[in-house]
Length: 351
Image (cartoon, rainbow, N blue to C red; front, side, top):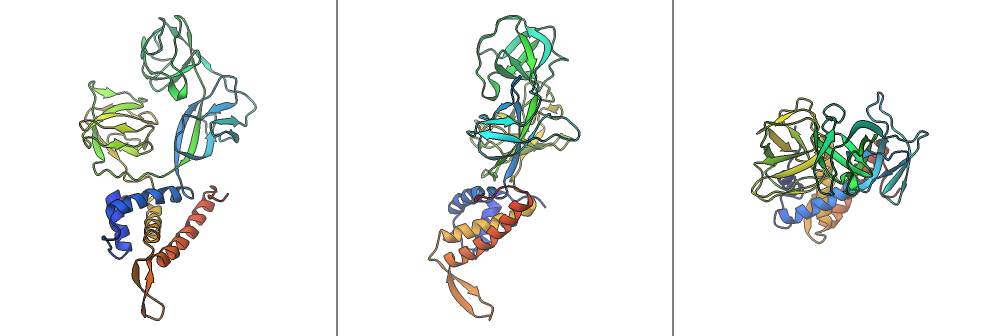
């Protein structure tokens, strides 16, 4: 059973409210869904993985690049270990984490250096010797104090400048290129349910394929001017690994196409015209009925004086207000959400 799209959730809520489409219109319920997503997510959030670069000889992690954060759920360092290594941390001012570790991170010298002076806007950086092996696609590198993301490797690196909130600046010839250690941050965020109806597009590129590790690709075949929102998730039809990707920034489409940036990097080579499909929702399937009930409860509370017919235990039909029914439903949903929060050992809004 697949997750329901936004339009179907609206219909389900209207049915829950007695097939009342006059008082509970689609635009009204769209606003209520946005309200419900925030409330629901404080109990059972969407957990997104973000990749951060550590700073050489420092236990501090800058998290200003993490947007829409409710709270930090887990921190993995060092990455790529079996079993995975999760550590404790202290958070400062919502933009910095101090890792509870004994040995400070250390950048690795790639053995590669710039082969030219680099200005603050160049995205193609000549290097020596060839970086094809030492700096594969998908690597985060550090030149002086600037982080860059590598999308093409070889004798010229194609990079994203000023990566992870660092500042793009100038660099001299023969400047060494370092590879910082990585940390994975697991962040609680508000769930997303895309409003747009066209959620399937195609990979579009001038070359034959996108290399594994790439985090920005061009797509087409979607709505002419839709906005694809940060944290929407998607899959790629040809990806045999089953990887679920997450948008890391908003993309406004023009003429049905645009560039999208995402986490993690491509798990496999992706060819032109492969189908890419955005998920209907970031909710888990088992959470969907509870969410629909929450939307119905909030919608009822927003229309407090509307009467509805309710059957009591004696079989007598008595009128009650939407507000009364909404409070009853909300109490039921809240109890279930509190149980959900305890199950995952995540804080409720009152903690």
